[in-house]
Length: 378
Picture (cartoon, rainbow, N blue to C red):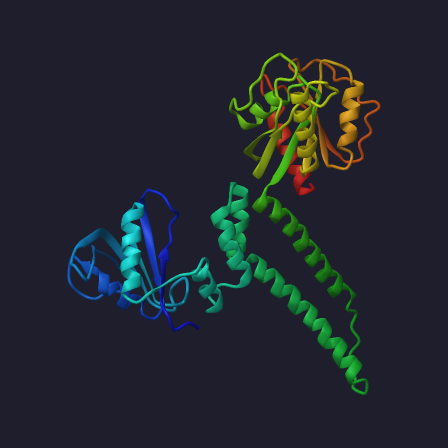
């Protein structure tokens, strides 16, 4: 597919124990041979690690102590000859080794070009190419498992099976329409078509969930002042991130933190208590709270379980009507305490009602599961 040889640093920027320079193409072995001096002289052998040093051919100076792996086409990620040079993981040895590889005849790879070559050479299909990036960027165990399943070809197999079933139906219809004089045994295509449709709908539902696992979701924590929004944020994060005091209005700006809630990567947004205020600073915080709510995928409407519903609670609930919402009764520090009535709070998109105690941690895991269920539509 390509007649040139590419090279790039294959590990993330920064310092580490080991970093890798990858070379792919017909001349990968020749490029490596020009800059690598093995401890024991001899050519590189496929699928064997060789110990030695990267040498500057111009000066003979030693650049780094390395291990080199050679993978011969087509038994490599790109289905081309591939050499991976494992250097010390600092920027200087990696960049110096890459520069020598480029001077020895390789071209600097474009972003994603190794995966592109794997795709164009038939090593992976398009869904697996996408999954490669998803594996790299996975933020939770569940997201990683989903990406690994797609990388293993699960999605491609499902699509191929559905396509084959539809082509079979199409072939039958074509024969019946184009050759009416032939005796073709009647068939009821309904069950096959309904099964194919169900499979497509299942794949689409899975795709929506995949977006949540891949991109994450934004969850806004809203409510009146002093209902425990910041305490709830800290409980979900399991770390004291937000300042908490008994004084209403302590939070005057939005505070955003990443969290893993039951396998879903979310951005939790603590907001200022929404209420009528003449304080210009507090008003600005309330405006930002409204903006955070507008941009969220899910709202946590926090209520004080030690008080009955107030007009302020109902007013804030009104702001969440267009948003999937979980009602959170916070400050349930006494499990035997009955919850106040929700009469008057008629929310068309309420996904769950959860009782929590941010102080003791009771109900916090249940809330995390409720958030995951609401985001995944389960």
